[in-house]
Amino acid sequence: MTNDELILVLTEKFPDAAIAKGNQYVEMTVTAESLHETAQLLKETEEISFDYLFCLTGVDYPENMGIIYHLESVKHRHVMVLKVRTADRVNPVIDTVSDVWITAKYHEREAYDLLGIHFNNHTDLRRLFLEDGWGFPLRKDYVDEVRIVER
Image (cartoon, rainbow, N blue to C red; front, top):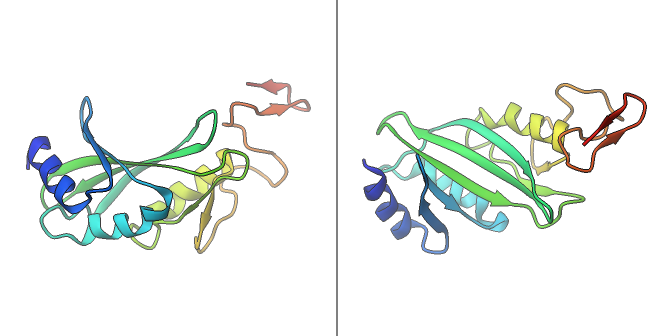
């Protein structure tokens, strides 16, 4: 399926989403409230079948946090990017997709550990790399006077 064909299918299946042709992949932005349902449909809809989450990235924006999911259909050999933003930057919360794509389990733990993004209903949300009390070193406002780290 080409990117243009994928855009047509996604536009039909997800009329409320913002869909655009990126430099490399099709990009779809959804609301936080619709994330989990969208993730399930992206995986379970046979004609697109996004069955593999190969990258999850947290992003610190001035007013909120963003999560970017890179998805692939192993069956159909196409790739897309799913984007969502939290409602709050200070206490960012979003639903987990680890029950949809098992690979999200550790990606979400990394975003939690480094950015402080809380994933609702995650079965094992705890720090992955750092000890408790470190703060969130990938946040733009991170300051650690003990280790002399500033952003």
